[in-house]
Image 1 (spheres, rainbow, N blue to C red):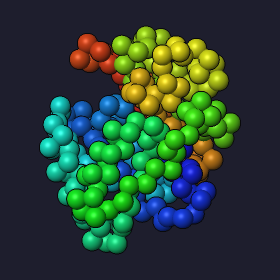
Image 2 (image 1 turned 45 degrees about the horizontal axis):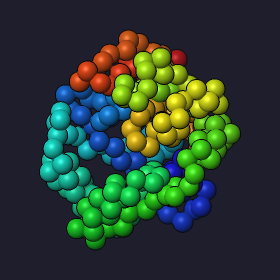
Image 3 (image 1 turned 90 degrees about the vertical axis):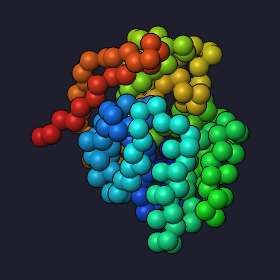
Length: 208
């Protein structure tokens, strides 16, 4: 949704999509999505994907060092800003701003302060499609893993869970929407439990 808002506003040139990858699993950190699917996502969006590789259970120091190295390279190419999809966690916003300030870059938050219920409904009404790839068992039970994010999904979320998963209650993979040039075909596999807390869904690309 953050990318969608940026593209619609037209105030920025989007040069890359940035994500962190856990080297041990070759998957997006926390989301558990394979790099093959992330590459397909970039392809159907027509935007290159920049991956920052982290070791398993990387400390903040490693995250900051590797991210800064990557962003410094972009800054030398003339990039001045980094956009995030954060909604209301002020400590996260300040942390991002502090890290970027060290290299004189600006943090942009296209969705900041908006009602998460409204954002979730806009996501669905705009014809975006997503599947839940990770749930925190402390917030949601296993039955939510692998579900489509639709109106029924939102209606069944416990009152204690943010409908956009802003507190990390769940993570997802978006496979279609108004800014995609085609749908990403995929199939689901097994569900695994890691750290005795997080359920992850194996999601694999399907090629025609």
